[in-house]
Image (cartoon, rainbow, N blue to C red; front, side):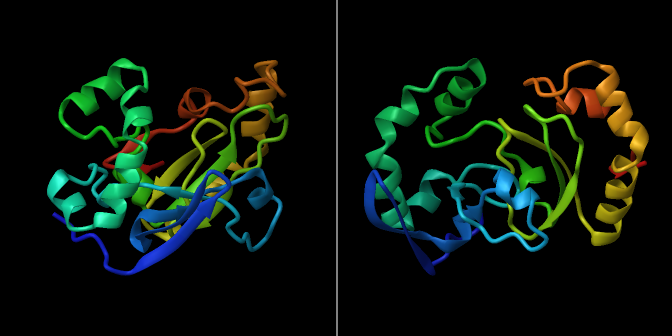
Length: 194
């Protein structure tokens, strides 16, 4: 069980006043603007009440951080009213704060990310550190080292990849560059991308 940091970050938005939350659980969220910048600066953030192994914090961990627990409980009704079989299964095990699409892959040190929705150009980019992907708009390949990231980026940046996507006649649609399409181009061997 990972400890929840005692170092807090002050977060706020239009709907809530300032709240102290554990800094290690606040992650920069990739936006479309970040694909245009050589050195992106976070403008949006996401709270992931998770351990780095991809498992939600447990009740004991939440008890050690009253501010986080209070924040989550203030949204408990909304969180418990979410729909979906997988979400309901996770919540039935007690973690009503659990999220879909969060696993150990979210906490890898490097991600090769591309805009997977509504685009007509395929431009993957490496994001390092704690950046998180907005999985409704973007897709990614997580890797452990910069060498791996550069190798995967080079492979995905080949002109044949974009030609393949364009051949599917879906540029500008919600089906552009979705993970299932890219998956057909990738072979995995012993947790390594080839």
